[in-house]
Length: 290
Length: 171
Image (cartoon, rainbow over all chains, first blue to last red):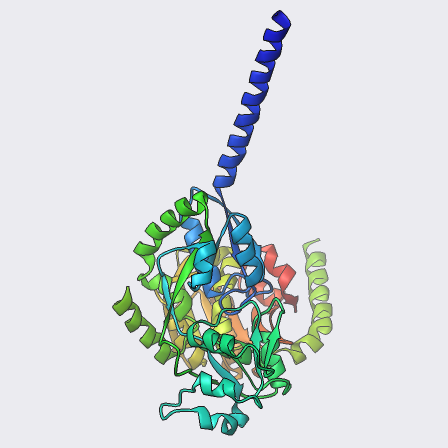
């Protein structure tokens, strides 16, 4: 009888301590916030002298400093990998767009930044090839352009181009004139393909094109053309894992974002990369929307 | 003993300058926006500037750099706030924490100014300067690079964080 009692007490202590260890581990994990970010200049710089100076890098840091209740970790991964990691592990990412598909897997913050949408990038000397698809404002029709199978588009497999571009790409996915790159880098490789005449056009952000062309590694002068079917701006979000931890974390992030998203010092992270006119337009849009 | 150390340091710097010559020749001018973005890191790596609450910058003959820096007045630069940015084509009379030397024409006078006032001298590489300022900002094979001049840094009484020694080429 005594032996059974001893064994019972031992088991009780064993399970109790095991339970406490699991709880402590869980609580430690709950206090850890993993920020995932891609190599995506100028929004993220992951190496070299520019490391950490991108606008999403700085937003991430700005928020991390204020969320003192967490231990912050930073992980570099491709967008595809980030979405996968957030689905199966715990963490957040700065600077993503909302979509129906993503909303199933991730929790989104309130919008915190307006960004200018992706546009068309071509070699300036080949502008004539694209003139039939331009309207009087100089904007291009993506639907009409993709219908021309003589012109080859380069796209990144892991990247969301948003709205009309994604819809038009989906509708044309059976076409042979769309070349999909599965590289970790979602822009510069395609830009080099354009420079070397392997594709006729690609999509990207205006500030992204400006940054890459300024590095002086391209032979051709490039041109950015806005897309007629795209909105004038897009709302950008922070997304976290869709679980109990994510619900709590997003609530804390939202509280913070609500207070800082119209602050000049916060907006400056993005506006730093814009030209003078775009910066002015961005200020006025932000005032209207937030 | 002190003389021996100084002479060794000078020899080391001379040898480094020989080693880095091809580097200086091949580095090109870094786009202005990237130079300004990097200034935030640079001022955090110099120990005197890193301790300052406010930083002032004078831009000598570099209109674009001045425009970009001016947009950042009142905001954080490194650990400090960018208090004031002025520009001109003459050496300033007032004391500034940093002087950006945009052209060859007054390079030596600007270096004398920075030594006298303990001001950090920055300049763009590949822009026709003699590359004698404390820190040159350039680009090589699409990657931003620094060229650090230890002699001039000493003259300006700068104390660099060791991180910069790992990432910069030495002159």
